[in-house]
Length: 255
Image (cartoon, rainbow, N blue to C red; front, side, top):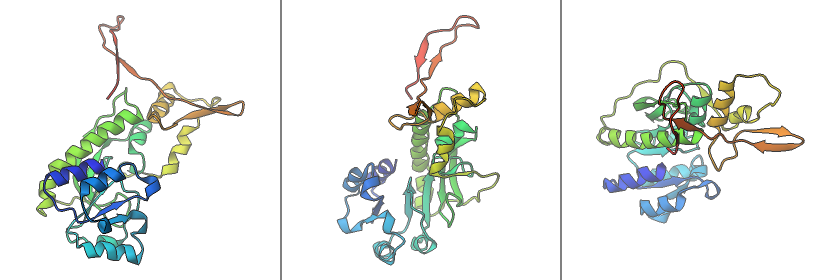
């Protein structure tokens, strides 16, 4: 998603003065982003070093107007955020304040929390800043963690494109987040990945856990028996109903 937004900004003739990436071992689209940015190698920075005096000075030297964060795992400190005259925006694939943090696609399936995407200004917290724009996304009964993620990804890209003109002109409104909030860390999925074969639960809760963690090639949910860990993926297909007692042909979900 970060690469797609970077490419779109270049198509809009925006000036990209710097690019901050995850360390080499954690990059997915690093090479493509570097190629798309088309900037001097000295303006490509390691996100893990932003907290250092050297990292701060490197960003300050670029004299950026606005910062854009997309699926960036490092927390920006106040002295870093203060560098940007127009602020720093984050695109988060959740309907904030629901599902701050990691894996919002998983938790909207598991706990029924609203799903969506949010463009917001960054502050000292994690996904807590003022909202610029939001879009809700329905969670369908046939969704897996993967299919919901893909739809959130597409909606996030469209939300950014639609919001960019007011952001670019410095006219973006700021709406404080209100209401009940939730936050999840990366390791929180450990609590739903292990399926206890002897536990009592409802079919709905079990299916929701399995489909939420179905996202190949990631391993997802599993059970342990005879000293072996067995991983599970849920296959979902939608029936085209012809009547109460006459199901229609099966339609595989590929979205």
